[in-house]
Image 1 (cartoon, one colour):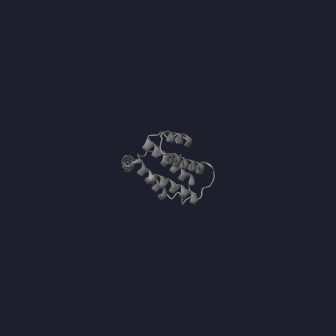
Image 2 (tube, one colour):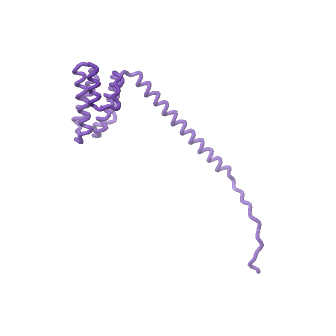
Image 3 (cartoon, helix red, strand yellow):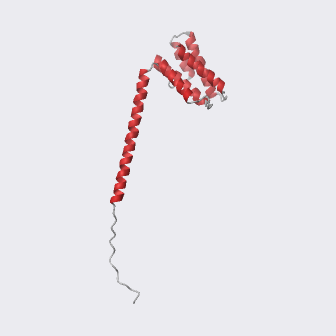
Length: 164
């Protein structure tokens, strides 16, 4: 009977939850602060982009976008699909802003038909056609475009917007 001992009362364990609560509150505060600053930053950049778009005429906006392509070094990195996609988008945005044409979801042929319906000069229309068809060929043909061709396309587009 020596092996049998009386049952002792349970030991009352006291755990201090205060440090965990403080750490949880600090983390919650930091998460809320991070979300607030992220949203605030995004709103500010959207306002800047909108104000720039409103202040710039379509031609200047297009020239600025061309400079951004140059800064992104798409030609040097030989990212021809991204390069030609951005050139196409610049022309589409120009048509939207300048002539209020809905070109967002149109094919090249539909865009060219809309440009021709504007009764612009033949030189102007043919330049749009040349640009858009060259861009489509480079994007969709599977032909790997070299740096020389990309520079020619860039200079053609830039020259067009400077001549307007």
